[in-house]
Length: 340
Image (cartoon, rainbow, N blue to C red; front, side, top):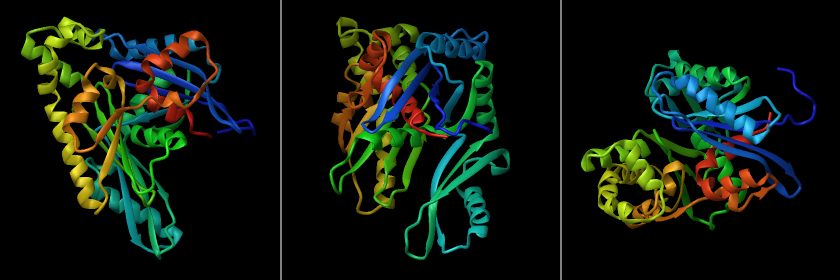
């Protein structure tokens, strides 16, 4: 690919199952600044979900006014795996083969049907260490096709968890010795991302998220899912109070999954313990959700809006989005921080 000699401008494009998010950043000596931001809901009309998604991307591009056609996207879910590796010291020519063998053992799918990439991270102790990323060809192809149909070029494919850590590390500095986690609760998947002390990421995608919680409440209360969603996203009122107990029940599986994953991390990284969890994603802004997690999870839980620390050079529409829906835009921000 041929680009200008100067750093090419890219946009972070987070294509979820229910919304499309766009962030474009500029960077100078003072750090990043948002120059475009937008979020558009994807019509849930099941007749043509792909067309609805492409239309949402187009509308978001129109409203944000971004000029670049270069998009950085990401994937997540059961068709994606992020794992660290550690081998005895290997010459450069043998690392790829060792990584492919490792991927075949840890990936939940046949690596012949996917793409593998890796990054070596020097440790200086006569070992070859790093992180590998694997994703199925199907999920990559599906995401690229959506981008192309929206008249954009996908110049880099990232992973949700790595984008979250990328965004967090740009502005948030944990206390010395403190282990933090980022919990992104979307519509279809929940991503738990932790940066180890050795610099290697720990990332797990959980297949229980916002839509599942809403569905469980709808079944219990004999309501339509869209009705439950509107109530949960509205200002506090009588209807929302009536759903509080149902929300807690529906979140039980998510709480158990996050707790078990945290315990697995603790067992793997003795004596590291996750002390603070920063929650983001579209479902994070449901009234009472973060407070519920804080009362049930074995760590302090807080809502995270990355744009509280990022300068904003956008119009009032985009500025309002960052203030009101910023936690849902964390992945898009992390993608926009990539460079090509």
